[in-house]
Length: 155
Image 1 (cartoon, rainbow, N blue to C red):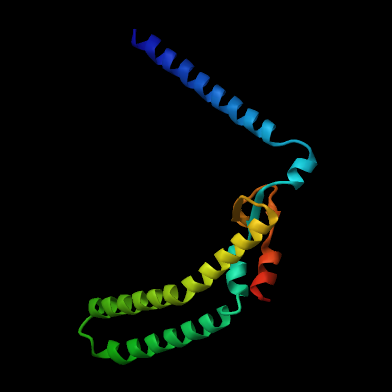
Image 2: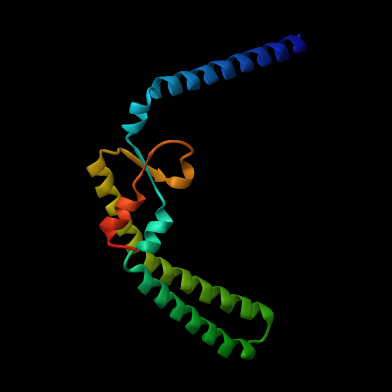
């Protein structure tokens, strides 16, 4: 009796997998059509990190972070020799790294928010309902990276 149940479970599992695959294929076929439909896609793609680096405020961010890192390094070099052991130095180093991460987020988040707002503006203008990172799009989608760069006034 146990063998029959295992066999039935296998058959049911295969049937469910087959129905799922047929559904996915059906959706894909219904969503794809002529090249005209692909050209009218309402999905956009952007290279987000490229847009962040192209933002006019990014150079100031990079300069400020470099100065913060140098200050943290000097602080570590000054205090580390007087610390009792490696564990104390490691804890101090972790505190400095956390401080740098917080500073980075503080400076970079406004840039990211501006980039996101600009992406939304360009997407709305183009009639796009979804914009994804370019690295996640295997096929299709309108690349709006250059349009967003122009609107940001970046490089």
